[in-house]
Image (cartoon, rainbow, N blue to C red; front, side, top):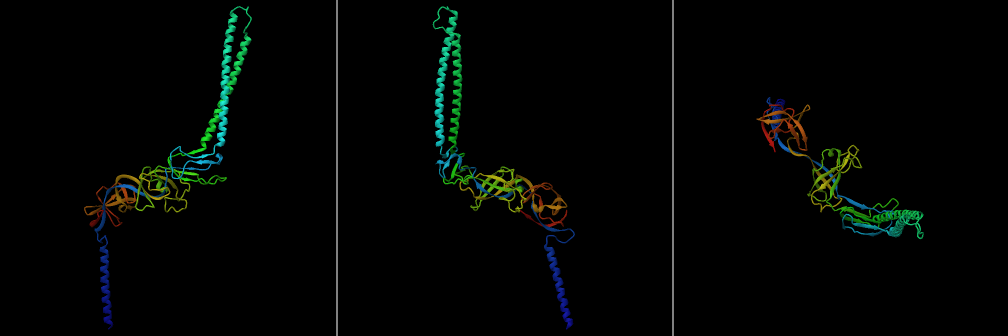
Length: 408
């Protein structure tokens, strides 16, 4: 009986050994590399091609107007006497927005104008007096000359040198008085100009073509000044996008690069734009902020403000909309490139394997720029060659390949 049991145990063990051997062979031959001395294998390959080395950089931002103007209360000007605009009204550059009470300035201006008129009248009188003295002086000099040349017998109506000198002194005094009056007239004119300038400043005008978005006639003025603007204007020009991006992205971004703008309130809709500028100076908050995820918030990532021009119609957009942006960075010129998985690092030497006539050929390559999917190869491969994807350490130059799958 015991002998039969042992026979059955031996038989079961034999079956298990045979089965395990079969499974091992099945698993081994089911891999891409077959165990033999030639290293015959099945691989995946992809054609070397020319690619645009463009990288998509994702940031976020906010819709803002091209520019805006906020008018705050100016207590030194007094009270506002009149508002010239209403909300949603379109305005042009130079249009009046509000007027402060200028009654005090108007009174001073009237007095200055009257004073100028009086000085001008006095000056005119002085000019007439100078003209009269000049005429009398000329006649006296002529008469004195004729007396010297004629008979000295006639003494009636004689003009002496003293008379001439006296008229000359009168003329000089009158001219000095007139110069003083002219100086006073100039001062009066300057005062009038100053008052007119003050009166003009009492009328606040728009500095842009835009839309009135807010008129707040009940703004409270405090010792520190009004917190809210009395009038808020936004530019009527197309909207733009502002945001902040990390220092890692700024080195890749250049002016004029294309941008795809996706407002969060509109699903599956896009607007086109262009990078207008990236600031050379960090944003006020320094580290962390809109446009960078995973920065850690430890202050080890510096953020830089950027601005994007929206080239499509912005009539459906509104100030304050939050948007995601895809910035196309890099060179749009096509370059010879391979997929990232095809590159193999062999002790610091970058190599690829090329499938050629049923065998793999080891190539050392030089790399250039890269994007998310491809790496530029400046030497070592040519367009159209089949590059091996995901090479392994077991792969070597001259290894035979029995079959392969070409990835598009």
